[in-house]
Image (cartoon, rainbow, N blue to C red; front, side, top):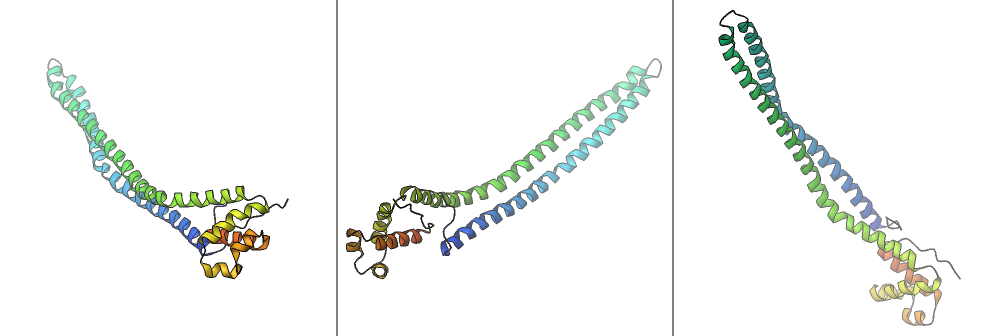
Length: 205
């Protein structure tokens, strides 16, 4: 099985298409990383808010402990500080949750930005490459003796313009019927070349 045609314009097109797919994937990977970083940067303020709320919570907890040490009224004095510390803890948790969601959104957006355009291009490019490889493999599997060249000779006579057939033989049909192996081999080789398939090495019996 061959993934590329013999040296020809078809080979140039194949190599160019493959290179374009690689460049396309790299470009969209860079774009996806940029989008991920931009979206994830939006989580910065939320994380800063969470850090600030946590610091304030610790301060209020310290104040509550200090107030609680006042004899007789310590319990009443620390209650407002405890309530404030609890509210700040909830605020910090909410801010951290928002930051996580924003970062997850950035990751998902980056993946989609990369996958969608690359998948569309690959869906257009890959079937053609696989079809060519399948034709190449089939050609090598079918032709394992000189007699099998008739298949490709017939294909050449059915698809080639008459002026090109005339360059091979004045009467290619008669030559094929007469079993002219030289003409048949030339026709088969021409059919393979038109398909971009590599020349076949036929094992003579």
